[in-house]
Amino acid sequence: MEKKPYVIGLDLGGTNSVFGIVDKKANVVASVSVKTRGHGTAEQYVDDCCEALKPIIDQVGGIEKIHAMGIGAPNGNFYNGSIENAPNLEWPGIVPLAQMFSDKLGIPVALTNDANAAAIGEMAYGVAKGMKNFIMITLGTGLGSGIVVNGQLVYGCDGFAGELGHVVIDRSEHARECGCGRKGCIEAYCSATGMARTAREWMAIRNTPSTLRDIPSDQLESKDIAIAAAQGDQLAKEIMDYTGELLGRTCADFANFSSPEAFIFFGGPTKAGDLLMNPVRKAYDENVLFNYKGKAKLLLSELDGAAAAVLGASALGWEL
Image (cartoon, rainbow, N blue to C red):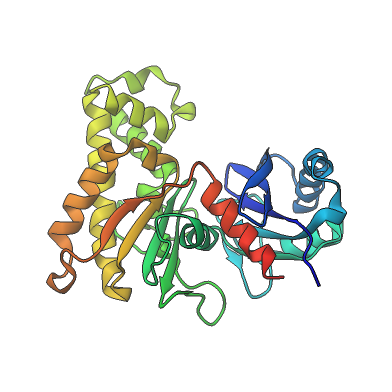
């Protein structure tokens, strides 16, 4: 039976939820974005999202033209279609999001971890095309990872394998608290929110002049740090170096797990380019086990914006 011409892909982030309607040639023909927070309950979030989806669904001929929907979400469990205890979302416990969207829209819905969705998108359409062993690192509200080994995503026994963002890199008494409830996770340092946290902490204890001081503390974002660093701001450059060093050092440890042919970085902070990636590469080369030296490429995603995650999520939809 011929599949309907479109699927919906959802990249559900801690800040924004980006929907794309995707055709069989992987073109995102229509898209809409909804703030992830502020809806109260998960049920209200689904209702509000479906309301926002209506115009772009109508644009492609109505729901009868949509084959299915795929979702990439934090703490998404591929096996049961639920988000489970996501630290960066406002809905506690287990949320059967795939079933909720399916009931509301009347189409099949699949769900996976957001970084896994990005890895699928990168493998199908991006710089990982043709690769069978790589690690995707997504930097946003949190730090996610999608691990591909022998051409397959690593899910583990429960659907939650590959949470590299919650590898502990600081076990001192001063380690930062992570949204997961533990201390010292790399997510607390190298995510977009972690970078902003570094800036606030450093400005509180250091007198270094910086244009970052002109931004209200609660409005400071990683992109402000990248812009300031590009303009030569010394404090901002030091924050980029610090973040890159921690990330590169930790990726050197990750290499021990699967000996990847590449690490692919995706998300807002990566728009800083070499300001972030040069210290990442330097720290990686200095810390990686000699067996792996010179083998893994450290690459930036070439897919624009949320395209990798949206396309990856949509690929789940085609499989239904």
